[in-house]
View 1 (cartoon, rainbow, N blue to C red):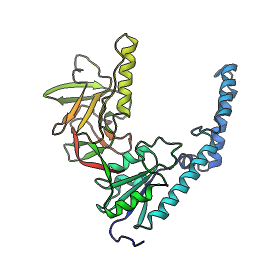
View 2 (cartoon, rainbow, N blue to C red):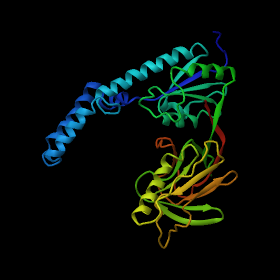
View 3 (cartoon, rainbow, N blue to C red):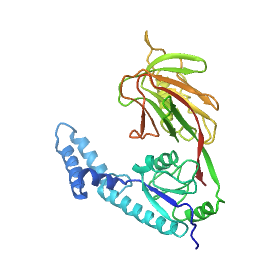
View 4 (cartoon, helix red, strand yellow):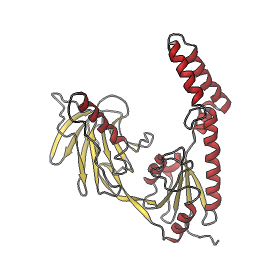
Length: 341
């Protein structure tokens, strides 16, 4: 098959659990020894578990040893073998169409994609979300390396069917689903996109302090930070906030029917909520949740002397500093992710 001269296929990969263990302990043998010793210590400590609890714990470990996600070394190795085989097959097949480049997740923030590139993601759902922020308006083919292990909500393809999608993407005849993204824009010109959600707050458990302006109202707040969610992310981190509200309502006899609004992935609106707002003489809790529509913005001024941050999609290592005096405008991003379907 004739190769296309322009552009390339960028294959984005993630570290497996086994690779992360190897980095932490230098060798797999040392990692295996440490994990086993920890489990032996749990069994040996007389005051930590009762005799009955120890028996149940041991029986559960033995029964689940062969299960997917068992946190046994054998399962880590199976995951590694499957991932390596999938990645190698994807590389070999993709090379028949265009030049390829394999990109580690850590290099995504600094990598410059070409508009003529095609992206193939091999990994979990979170890798798709993280990649989409940087591969702006570029087709993304997301492959689930182990459908029996990963839910794959954002991973419609497998080794069995991705090649047809790639062929269509190369010829420009692919179909795709547009996904609306959020954007945080600082007054100094820095910006950050989010596929699922933005977090605005402090990089620790202490209270975030800021001034918020929404819908013509402004107030000072002290809270556990804010979450701004896209349609794609509404069933993720944002759903945990609604679960909390539902549980509290149920405990005190109120209606537990509190659910996250169903938002299409391409909807031109964002949903925000303030986590645990604290009302005091200097902080209000009137602006707690709402929608940011197209053409609207949520304006936040930091009142945090240090450790204020804005990060997206749970990636805390890629963040914007948001300390006292910084102003952020939160709204819909002009770019949308293109997930090939």
